[in-house]
Amino acid sequence: MQRLLVAILAAVDAAIAAAVGLVVLLAPLTLLWTLALGATADWGALWPAAGTLWQFGHGVPLEIFIPDDVVVAVGISPDAARFTLSLTPLAFLLFTLLFAARSGTRAARSGAWLWGVVSGSLAFALIAAAVAGTARTDVATVPFWLAIVLPAAVYVIGALCGAVRYVWREGDGGFIDRLHDRVDSWGDWGVVPAEVVRGTAAVAVGLTGVAALAVSVMVLLRGGEVVALFEAARVDATGATVLTLGHLIYLPTLLVWAVGWIAGPGFALGAGTAVSPAGTQLGVVPGVPVFGLIPENSSFWMLIVVLLPVAVGAFAGWMVRSRLVWEDTAHGLPPRAAIAAGIALLSAGVTAVATALASGSIGPGRLAVVGPHIGWTTLAVGAEVLIGAAVLLLAPRHRDELAEERTDRWVAEMGASPTKDAAAPAWTGEADSAPDANETQPLDEHGFFGDGSTSTPR
Image 1 (cartoon, helix red, strand yellow):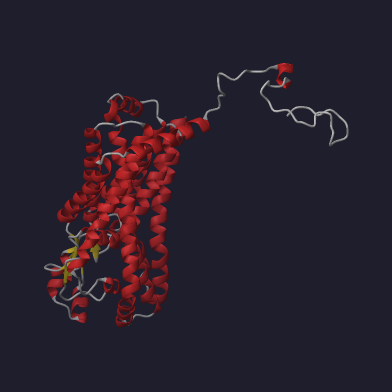
Image 2 (cartoon, rainbow, N blue to C red; image 1 turned 90 degrees about the horizontal axis):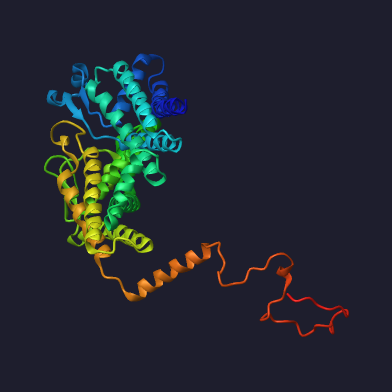
């Protein structure tokens, strides 16, 4: 019954995750339908539009077909009436990933993590299949199997990572415990897998923080260009709200672009374009307000920003190295070299996935190539993180540093110890009040400065 209850709760979690994502889309779309279209609104198209955007937010590419009457009315080229839209707004994907990780952790805490992961993933896949079967539009079509597989894969990865992370630390009395014991039997090499994951998490958090700082600086420096593009769009309050919401859901995508720029390779805004610290080469750029943040000119000296990923790798190496010293393990050079290489490889893998999701097409023709280059960005981040992590993990330790860390560990262990010195005599009963022969006695034994009573030793 416990496993059944965990499976039911995990399925409910998956349903809530899907419902929240769909409601977040349905709410502004309903407001838009009401304010912009009014009584002439086609309410039957509301759900297909929301479902299609939900699938697009989980990495499913859209095939856009512009009707012939719209092509004639707008005056665009017939060649541009059909194109692929595949630049994913990563905000929805990250929400599902984090919610699934939370659900997997809860299932692991309940003692039936595998049941929880399988049940939640199946429930989310069924919901994705229901959305794919009911949310179909003529303007934007999606591959049916991708509309089911990609959202379900996002949930599976999140739930599995959350569950395995918890049971690896706390134990599950089953397969993970046996695997943990086998890894522990490797001696100094037993800490390598856990420290590689820990260091990679530090790299991911560090690069995200650096990218967020870079975007914030560009908003301060080039906020005027963004406002000018908003004004040039000549949209009303409803249109400005839609543009603002679109910018917000693409904010994680912009952070990945910023990581590509900081790492050195940069990103593209169309075929034959490049935005990097070494230089900016752009042609005609769409008048999307957020593109006003792109620097118009670059300097060779801006290549100094590539030291930031090196610093992030050094931070991860320092964090792992401090833990190794505290636990007094991985003394040899080979295990630490393996940890540094593992952090670099896993960080490169995470970068490759993020870059693949943050790259794609936003229109026909040259706009089919947008975002960071997957190969070069992955190689740059991996190499820079490897340099930083290796410097901290492989550098020799100073004697003063070792002595200070041993002292801190000894103080912490002694402060947490509940035992007393074994050499100290233990007094019981009435003997507890017996004075120690070495204990200091007050001089005013007969109460010379008091009320005449005899004082008792403290």
